[in-house]
Image 1 (cartoon, chains in turn cyan, red, green, orange):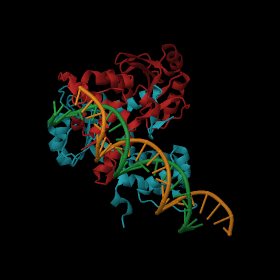
Image 2 (image 1 turned 90 degrees about the horizontal axis):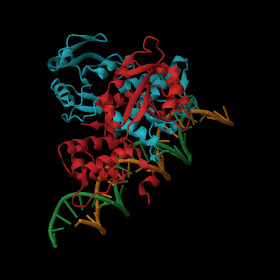
Image 3 (image 1 turned 90 degrees about the vertical axis):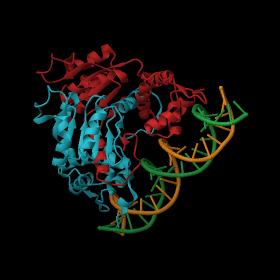
Image 4 (image 1 turned 30 degrees about the vertical axis):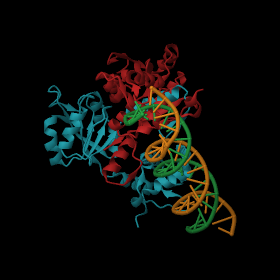
Length: 222
Length: 222
DNA sequence: TAGATTGTTAATCGATTAACAATC
DNA sequence: TAGATTGTTAATCGATTAACAATC
């Protein structure tokens, strides 16, 4: 019955969905009604069969000879990723990076809404950054529960990252988006996704040095 | 003769090296002289054989029964990644994110030095951000060549990303670290590494929704 | 020596790519 | 119809894991 959800879905496929989404939106802006996987594949330099497999995880069905309806595809991908109705998130660490993320308008596109920022610095608490209040981190657990916020974004210093994660866990948060290079430890039922700039830079510099690297992924266009 | 450099090195291995590096530095701070792969593997939740394979790409040799010398391992990894002597980089787009990156002290650890920022906004040009001058982007190509800068960091708006890439290419830049969600097109000999927040968030939210996801990678700790 | 660990070779696993039948 | 495209099954490829001999 549920051919896709039973077997599990490859993480690489999930990570490519936003790529398709972005491209499809440019097509929609250009008033394209339908699109074939070969067209998507050409534009994104991905194998057409892989594109078909990736799109299949959303449950979309195409029409032979025609392709997929652009609007339907966009809807299906957003629905699959849960980006159709935005999730509220708390940000911990109102420094430079935190401020940048609070000001990043692109989050609306990807279903995330940073509703408040937290810090320990008395100089920051009470101020507003990009129209969001900065609160003391001690207030986070209670507010997270009362506001049903399930996602935490960590932009503290490396030193404070684990403390931030602990506070978020105390607030019953279920997912942590960690922008610090510090690995954080959380209970099994909390999901952690790390944005690891060092890994990304390692991929860049090793290729820059002309080393022969195998298995280039989608984040590497030449 | 060169057992590793002939066959090419897996990109996943390269992306894990910074993870090891960070852990090894905590060991060095604790005055640990030697370390075994089993110890590293336990701490980082990675298979010990995989750790050995990853470390092997740097050319390090360990001693059976003993392990690896911590300091030597750190040196070898930094040398392999080219992080032992920092590379100069230009940043294009002095907005919120650009400002955050200019203020990020962690780059010293990973061999990157942002030496100047560029923008088109007259209000910004001539100012200083975190002690780096903001110059008009028109001056970039000439300066890049004269200063032998080979790395460009793009933190512009989506709209301006391709223009930024073009200017960097005109300056003879060889690698672009793209922080915008826009895919940029560059000549074959220029390396592009994308920091794709949407992909990262997709991995987070799909796991948050309790979907069965295969192939969790290192960026996903639970 | 005994035993922990390295380094390597073989097996497994999953993702990607190729082939092709079904469809409109 | 002819032919482009989907959707699926099989083949390939590479990364990870397991097994194990070599080493000190």
